[in-house]
Amino acid sequence: MTKKIVYFWIQITTAMPLLSLKAIEMPASPIRKLVPYAEAAKKSGKTVYHLNIGQPDIDTPQTALDAIHNLDHRVLEYSHSAGFESYRIALAKNYQVEGINVNAEDIIVTTGGSEALIFGLMSTCNPGDEVIIPEPFYANYNGFAVMAGLKVVPVTAHIENGFALPPIDAIEKKITQKTKAIIICNPGNPTGYLYTQEELEQLKEIVQKHDLYLFADEVYREFCYDGAKPFSTMNLQGIEQNVVMIDSVSKRYSMCGARIGALISKNKDLMQAALKFGQARLSPPTVEQIAAEAALQTPKRYFDEVVAEYVLRRNIMVEGLNNIPGVFCPKPNGAFYCVAKLPVENAAHFCQWLLEEFSFENQTVMMAPADGFYATQGAGLNEVRIAYVLKKEHLKAAIKCIAVALEEYIGTTN
Image (cartoon, rainbow, N blue to C red; front, side, top):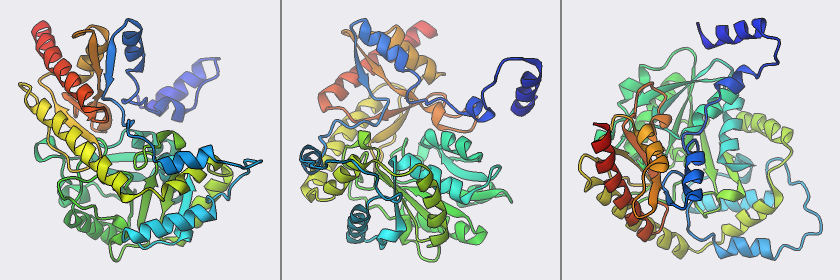
């Protein structure tokens, strides 16, 4: 029986009030599902190195912190539903400097990048529509699709070529009458892969041919390495009305807790529709917008230093992993994530075992099983996503733990 048939059968045969079908279908986060085991490990006295979540330990820019510390408002009032005009104007100017030609009216400030994507999907798609996403992808896209009543149609990228964009003909084969959009993350979470301009131009052709929306999550745009340069989908010529960019201050300024994002598009009808969703939630948070606007004054040297630090951390992590027998990890060109293939059958079991049973010098590691970043059943079972957001000493200790753990785990499970 399908989920819906089972749901309605239960509804008929029980007197208990039921949750909604959306609530039942809403997936748990693969990034956070092992948290109870990590908490138990800490309570037992173990040090847990958190490689499971993209929470940078980089200092938030002082300009943003000063804006909060020096706040002299007597009333924390609502902002405009689209966000403070001063922030949108300043943000537009910031994009223009980066070569992205948008104006304040092309921007809606949201409560994090997550809300931006949710507003965008609900403004463009109907329940039952399909969205194509190269996998592995940011796991919460699944949850956003459930909220909007959409079906995720995955196209699999592969670790052997570093998770490059799948062949365009493979993507086009997934297009049906119900297809409404393609969603990408560039640079990518969880893979760190940076799509080239050539790959984006290939996507443009099928977006144009089938009149689809192209949602581009570009929140890691500042974090590109080894001379690689990001190319924004906003600069794709000929599909300006089809492109929707998602942005956020979370990772750029190490302000994850601020929950300030942005929905950006040249499509006026889409933006008017999204604003109605914005009005329904009233406004994005006031104090955090003030901090985000101040963060735009962050000097370039801040990003130069951050990028240099992430390159160092990436090299430590990727080289360290590839030196462990049986482990393969491609070197990413962006973001601060990598996906590694382990010599185990079930990475989720291994990750839980690490927290429940393993200890090396009273230390262990928390990673995110990568199968939760795939929509294809059975994909990524022997892979993990790692966020290299810790100091280099902690990364080296975590790599040593993983190496010792794999040797012990393989020995006890074979």
